[in-house]
Image (cartoon, rainbow, N blue to C red):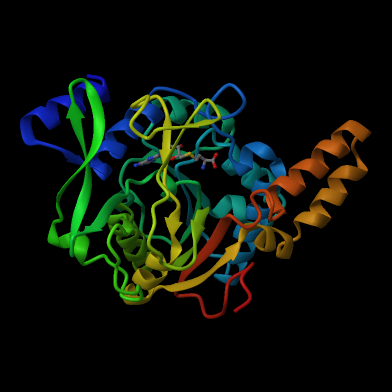
Length: 354
Ligand code: SAH
């Protein structure tokens, strides 16, 4: 059944659905039925812009593995690997790190059968395994990578109206989806950041119980296995009122309620919520840093210069442009943030000044 029909049925049966339910169903269909990346798709991500992105994350992963004492077996996990480009670049960049490839077991958490197929093609020659549940990982140390994964997990909105919080929801007017409201369940109220000033009428707050629950599982994994992770996404470092839900259809913004299941829907990641939850769980959180600074600290400019030495003038120009796109604050450099997580590591973590 199309997500459109399923949502209609649910709304007719039970009344308006929360935005998280709407987003979850729409995205499951969206990712499950296409390769959304690149010019012909809806959007482009950092690993698709340049191999340098994955190469730098490869250097990061190798350094973390060395800091962990070079465990003889470890899981290299990627969340939502898209076309598999990032993992392929990480693996190529680390092929000469003595012992690293012998020790790693590649695991991919991916919901989409179409993208699992793409990942298998990109990683031919390696032995990746796909998992549907984090609990399926072996009890060995873990290094985790996630680029633009958390922004795909559903968010919900509450709005302060007439002195009370109400939840924003999606209802039907005839055949058309429209925004409406419903009462707020207690578990959402519990997620309101403690640091916010008192709300004013009309204030909207974006919360993500889905992301919070997912991160709880990640923290448990790290605590049971030791290791480190890096989370990269567009997001913000301080909790604030407002909402960031957006839909993109063929490289153009559109209404979140239009093109259900055919448009990419995302929301910026509240890194402060992840940081608070990490502290509560006893996991160390680093950053968030801006992506530009993170990539530069790990040597992306030197890597670019090296690639340029062996390139034609046209290729050199493309490299220069990619470097700018990934690092400049007018492009992805500031909007995208990087957060590090560790458990059981004595010192800091590569890429984050401690
Ligand atoms: N990391 C890739 C792709 C980002 S798009 C890149 O940077 O290019 C988001 C990815 O997460 C896609 O691969 C999508 O299919 C996957 N995904 C989205 N929701 C998911 C979920 N709930 N569980 C597992 N994978 C999911």
